[in-house]
Amino acid sequence: MLNSTQLKTDQQSHFIRWNGDIADEMLLIALKGAESLSSSYQYELRSLTHKKESELLRWHGQEVSCQIGDGSNELPQRLLHGIVDSNLLFSTYA
Image 1 (tube, helix red, strand yellow):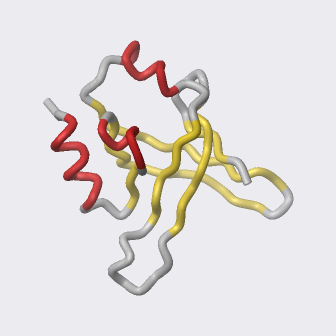
Image 2 (image 1 turned 30 degrees about the horizontal axis):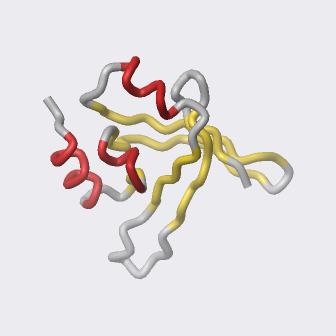
C-alpha cells in the first residue's frame, strides 16, 4: 500500500508530477490531452492513491497544478493549472 512519504518521494523521480499538497495523496502516472489556440486546453490525468474515494472529495473544485518535465535535459519544464471536477478529473484553464 502506498503511503504519503512514498508518494512524495516517488513524485520527485517522475517526468510528470503533482505540485503542492495533492502530491501527498496522489501519484500522477499518466497525462493525456490536447491543446489548441482556438479552444481551452483539455487534459485527463490519472493518478495512484492510498486514499479512499470519499477522502479525495475534498479536492473537488480545488485549484491544483502539475509539472511536466524534470529539468535534467535542458528542456523547459511546464506547469499545468486546473480545477478538479466532480468526477475527480482535472480541467485545465488558460
